[in-house]
Image (cartoon, rainbow, N blue to C red; front, side):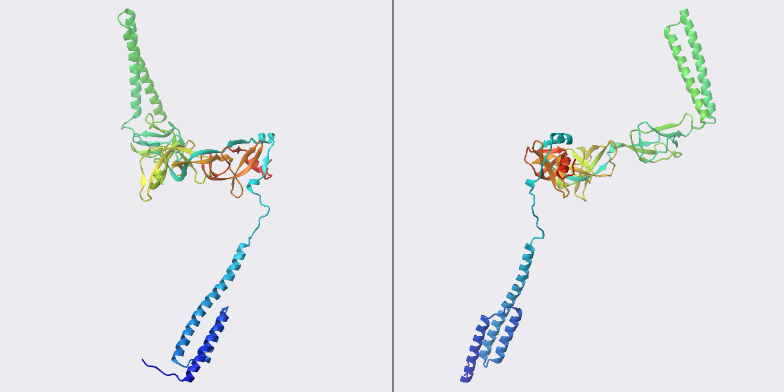
Length: 463
């Protein structure tokens, strides 16, 4: 290790430089900068002090470096404080601005202090006000799904031509969508005639043969009656002769009628087949037109009976265990408001179907469609009951009113001829009952008929 001797003059200068730096540091620490500009001025003073009193030795240089490092850290701390103080002031101003309310409501009316409507007995009777108590009932939880109207497999009947022939229509042209009754004539089918040179000759021959049989039967009947008078015949023989004469007379009558029809329409007389509607329903398809030649067994038209239809409800397979499949479903339009009329649909055992692409399985229900308003393929809303039920406040749905802001209210009968408006929160509507999340106490009487008139009386629009 080597040692260097510092001259006294240099040592004194170094001591004075260190002493000046210590004083300068204490002075600056006692008066720290408070802003970014002050920090810059502080740095300038430190730099000028170092330039005015430069270190004269290696040790002095090291100490000055340590001092500069300390000044650097002080600069970083002061900068952070300045930034935080600069941000805190605008934020405080914003908090003060946000704390000031944008609007102030004065003389607000509490819901417990709403107006009470008092009606005279005559007015109450004229409005037809009726009440019902608020009840606590066990109501099944429900879910609403989308369903599709489908045709039952046994509701479609197809008619085919019984023989080869040509179609004709006595009634107006059959059209798809037309409603028909069972037994209503729709087509007339004229079969192709068997080879015959002259059909008239054959019909006239049948008439002559029938006349001959009638004459022979009449002669036989006269002879047997004479034998009966002479005692040579029995009553039974006379009866048989009379029956033969009657049968021969019927054959003659039929032959003459056939001849008359032939004279009116020589081609299709006696051979036209009438095609009638097999059941009440709607024509779904028309597969042949009048004037067309059809073969035996060719389809002519289809009739579908829409008096009752099925509705198919696809459910996610994970929800099947949650649904009570024995309960009756409620069918309604997709855009119906809560409480709107709905149709009951009973569950049925239908062929199982599912859709693996959508992870759904189908439930089927049957519902009446006597008015024919439901059509195959139509989408409907279906409300199904779950297996889980709960006790909830319920009131008749007719008791619930809505104001202009969507709030739900009921009128409670607090005293004879006195009614007060109470806010309710409707969770859902099940059939004709509104399930409430909150509302009047159990047993309180609410208005079910005449509530709209009382509402108008409260706001000055009633009579």
